[in-house]
Length: 403
Ligand SMILES: [Zn+2]
Image (cartoon, rainbow, N blue to C red):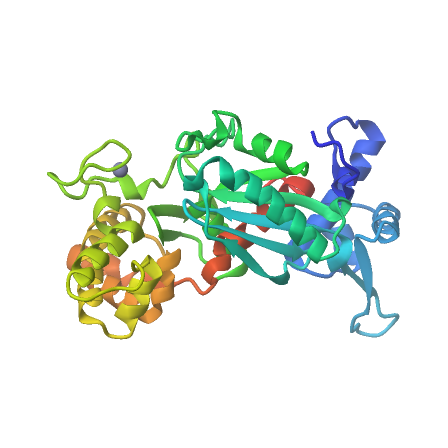
């Protein structure tokens, strides 16, 4: 437990019992209602929380006094006195999201209305830079708080999205030795001296889409994250699916080429060896670099930009990679019959170009009836998808028990 005067401590129930426990649980429930459904009247709150007017009034006066909640004025009513609307005070606290990738790290600070404060800050080093990255994260976060004049007491938590195999129960990463086998959230809590929460990056993206993006009303969605690697997250019956230990969605490591290249995971012919962003960038550099002098090696983003602009060599590279992606995805569509497949991660920068190429390739490998039953969508959250997805991870831990 972090020893700080963080305002989140007002909602901790660990050592409480009896009346005090009931009181804090109701405060949490009311905050959760405001976060999920917006402003409400006292009558609404009584109905939703199944509590009496005096009980809700007592909770509300505490939340108003502590600055968590604001009175947003009156609403329209059919005759009689118009009831007042209450809702979250956006400046009552802030969450910090960190998207820790293999070769970059992004930071974002959000208020309690999930509005981005300032802009996303990124640095070109990530987990692959080993120990340096942890020092740089600490430094950058401190600089960010100074720049935004935010005291640490106002920070309700830090959510860190990261790739690889992470055990959801222990918090241990099995993919990166940067954390020395320690639970990742604990490494960050020691480093940043703030409450920290972790989630797999592709699942954070799916949460971002579910809360703030195009998956809000979709019951069954598959989100494919093509960036440095390839991940898949599944929203099934409206819930994020994690699997027994949190390892579900290692789509990049399904075998797609029987006598293919060795993958860094130790297996042969994984999807990542023929369709990941790293593979696409390397392939473009070897093909285009042999024909023209490049000032700098092409990144995955550069190859997407060139393909969208009509560069035939880059288009062909995407055609090749999409063939493998579609082969893999068609199997998942056959198994889950989703409402939608969402193209996320860096690949979503390709917009309609990527959508049309994948759509066509999926038609080759998917049963017609099932292909027509599945919408192909492109994420519009850009680099904020995983960052936004960490907001519910941090806040649900504080105000409710589900994400
Ligand atoms: Zn692999």
